[in-house]
Length: 295
Image (cartoon, rainbow, N blue to C red; front, side, top):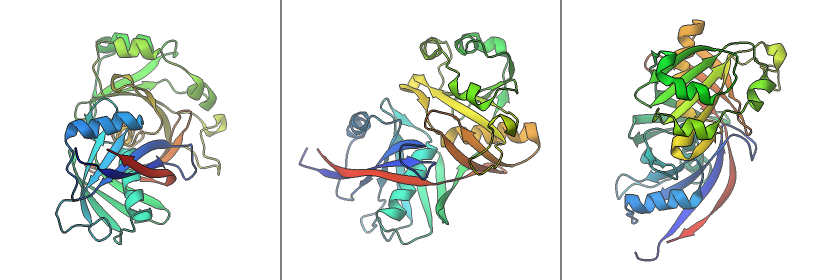
């Protein structure tokens, strides 16, 4: 390979302060650089974040500043994935905030179809396909359930086939502190017969138990997301999981607009709106680092 220099950015998504939300590495690929999938995967391994996104120019005449349609691919340290919400948000933030893209609306061509992102004040608005769920019997997932430990009962289990997410709803009544400090057996989870992309665990609780933002806005539900099958014990804030949660909680609560928190150690808040077969996500991003990778 001839000497190649690639600009790289680290962006914390679904937050407006560093070291919160979910970090992603973003790599805009120049039109004169053609890297094989093996090199893209090695870059993702080198960055060692939950996801590294590659923004690709689609035509020789395109530019990151003037164009409004780009290719976008996401790689974990293990393999390429079909959809990644936080790295999409981070990619849009790089285009708008670092590469001076002049448009307010951008289309990403991806393995999940066309994803539309727009500036919305200080936030970024994203439009994703919904993660449709179907009910599952608990007996089908005994190893997963066992890996959760003593969780005082499970209310529901559903599965999203398109994204390979299993969603487990715990009984309501957990305090926010209890939910945030609860620790499942990640090793047992990974050894389970379920070969999933990820496991979503969700619950609800009264605002008096900490289920509200710093400014007092109540959360409609909270969640955590575990991806040990992709070498990610717990993902900090997961946009694709919110598309599954939106479908599930819309049926449970009889509403389509949600304000929610993913309760990882880093944590992040997301506005989620179910619109037919699409889910709109609204979040912010914080730039943490940029540099050059030499190949």
